[in-house]
Amino acid sequence: MAARIWSPAGSGGQALPLLVAHDGPDYEAKGALTRYAGALIAAERLPPFRIALLAAADRDEWYSASAAYARALATDVVVSLRATVPVAGRPVGIGASLGALALLHCHHRWPGTFGGLFLQSGSFFVPRFDRHESGFSRYGRIVRFVREVARAAAPADPAPLVLTCGTAEENLHNNRQMAAALAERGACVRLHEIDGGHDFEGWRAALDPHLTALLAGRRRS
Image (cartoon, rainbow, N blue to C red; front, side, top):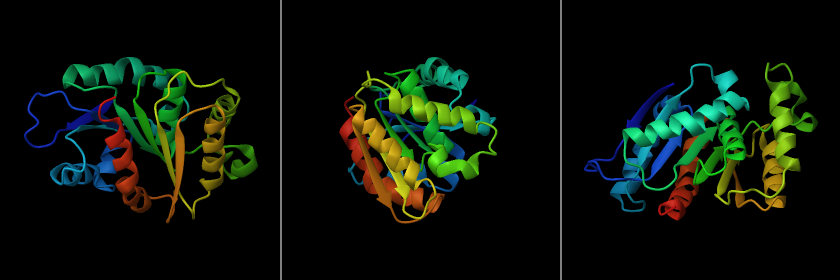
């Protein structure tokens, strides 16, 4: 896995909170993620934090509820990031579409890895709403994981989960269902329905205030 770490100006070697971004290069190029971070830090609306921009070599395989990837993310990638830069508290994860699904899968299988998740337009496929996605090679694996979450016991990790989804998206129905299933299990979860579709324009617009609120609340986790 390739990863690039962004740090705010003047951070030096101090321990800072870390935001781990799936599809990091796209979040940077299309979502202006580090520009958002720099602006919020400069305005003192958020304390300084770093961002790890992760790039998947095989996105469809790694991000589709892969047990091997979840294990690697929790036990190798996050550990390696901590060895590279000093990290304060547990990192927060951000991802969109399959990237959001993969973060929730890791959180479910490896509780304690993240101190919070920001999940945008997650691909939480269920046959009732998403049979048109059945041609995707890992559709069955995703459906099985979504069912597993719905049937699971109360979560061992109370880390906050923030979901966003565009009102024009096909994924809106499965995001509503996932948010409800997580809430029924006792998870700390909130879904924000926003204007727009399944694209970085909508995802970028949702960063502030919704990611801002999550990071402000988790800065001491």
